[in-house]
Image (cartoon, rainbow, N blue to C red):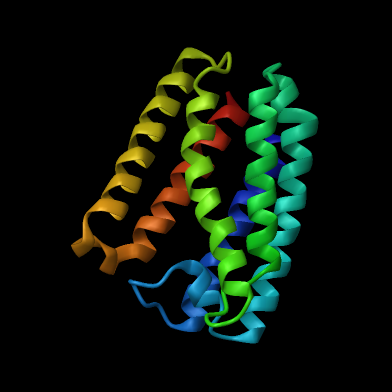
Length: 179
């Protein structure tokens, strides 16, 4: 199952990189705003992220969470993570339409739930090495989020903060899966 999770992480990564490249990389825009530039990108990215979200949800709820015998809080956090990803996949960030606030609520909800989810994962019965790696990844994401939200002069690099933030979270999922 961990190999399937790795495949979905790679799929999300490749779809994000393709969307940014296809739209023309602009460092102050989010991945979603890159996706929204073209209908073709919206459709392709939405389908790939939607499929990856369904596969990840199956892995989370049938294998990863039961593997660690986690409690209700972890299930709730992963339901929220999956729901936010699903909305982000289904509703592109098209500025000036009804989609924009819906997408933004899901995307920013995902940002904040990631930190809480990572903290909750530190209470899982992870092997020692995985726990220390998870602690480092959680600290890294906390710092990235604080820098991105508090340092206005760094907002010009939003795309890279977002990619790093998502990459760190997905890395923690893989650490837990392969532990």
